[in-house]
Image (cartoon, rainbow, N blue to C red; front, side, top):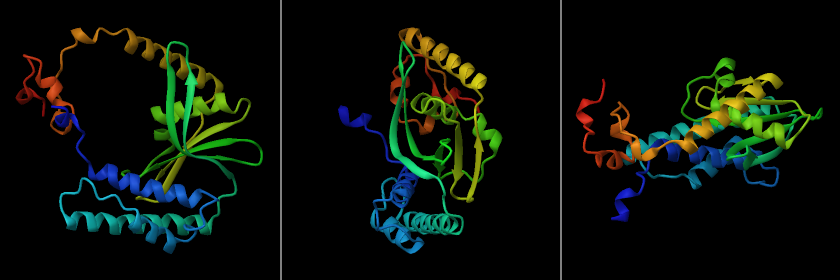
Length: 230
């Protein structure tokens, strides 16, 4: 039954996707329909994704919160305008690492007048962020690696914006850190490519009950969800 493998809609995915779409329009210089906080809030309501919410009340509360987040973000940008040029929005990047290709979609990339490049990632579910967290973030380091390849010789940094808190933090890899990270990715990729998946046995975890692919693990005769750790 093909239908039983369809992923269940999640309200937090819908919430994040709705916000991302408006931020994409706001930073797109060709979109004249979203230039103020009022326009952004109206656009959010028009393009709101309502999948995954347990009730109309929950959805209405999330929409109200989303409007507040978007309005606060746009107002903050208007107070302190972005001086760099936005050169990429919702763009797929790729980097050939030999045995495999690293692929990722960036929310936004800005470039300063001095040529330095900054990848910006919006997080709708985070209540805050620190520079240390950005520096240790796998995805942000991967984005930096891909941008270093795309913009050779340019300084590259990464920024996470925690939309709920209106906070942001940044970090940048040194050349040595970038080389070490690339080597670690290649090692991990080789392990994934060469692993004997047929011999793997599923292990119950606390997140299993929320997993869309739990039925696959239940096919294993020794898998017992009741034995998962607390």
